[in-house]
Image (cartoon, rainbow, N blue to C red; front, side):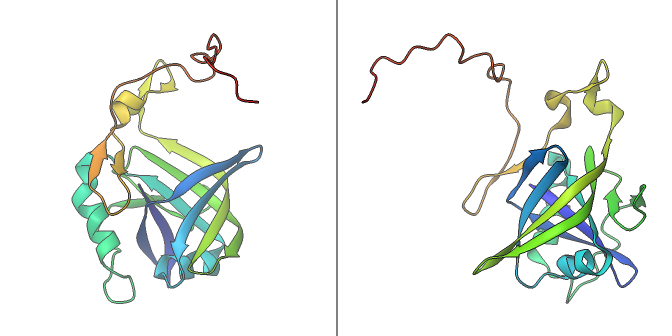
Length: 176
């Protein structure tokens, strides 16, 4: 779960996003799926910048409220304390353990939704989420949304080391 942020008419606005993912690592690129008509998307197109803010489980109420309410009808600028980083126009939620500043690369229009793609310019991480200078998922407590339609969860325990655990695996049966 993330909160996409953009400055709209000079004020921060946030949209709850269930589907977002890294697309590439060189350059670091992220994509998120947004509904066709979103005030936050208006701000993304206006400024060509946006933020991806990863809330922790303590922000479930505020995150859910942002998803339940449209910026076209309510002012979301007072929900969070915000700051701005290097880009100057992508509102960062101070209480989120991780926030990314992104420059808009492109919007791919699909039938029912749009894929918003951005290049990550800056990563902001709360020091409390680090161990020996590296990100520590056990300290991040990201808010997770089980699809379709919920509920929210928090992160469980480490399962295995990626790119290592499968090295010794031998399939029982090879399909030809």
